[in-house]
Length: 188
Image (cartoon, rainbow, N blue to C red; front, side):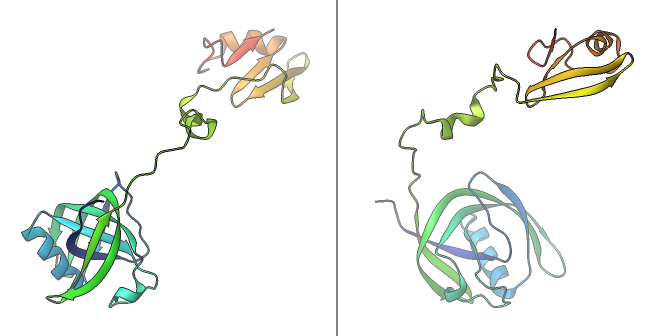
């Protein structure tokens, strides 16, 4: 089982921090400022967790149990509070919230990351795979051409097949991008 630790709580109103995300946060509530000062005296870690309700004085009952262990990066002090950069590190679950020295702290345990059951499943690989156009057009349209309508067959996102004069003008047109890429435009 993962190691339990007690760290200051940074309640978030209308914001969620994810692991790997860096986000600017404004803090001005007295309890939140005390929690930040406590974290700065130690390892700069806070438990960033969203509030269920938008209240000025967060209580343990209105905080979610799932949050993120975040590291305080840069900090800029101002008249009404502080601006800081939070760097999300790891998801965690709060086992218990308590009031300590005027701020909330939480006993947390890091959450174990869940790996996919089958990493070869298309749902997990979709973003990594190149798009392959279907052999049959998904739509055919006609565009006006200088000598009448020009058929255009659409095979997928950005993949066209052009016929006639439009295809020949594509070679001469200024500012045409991707015309040398055979995957993008096929002339027939």
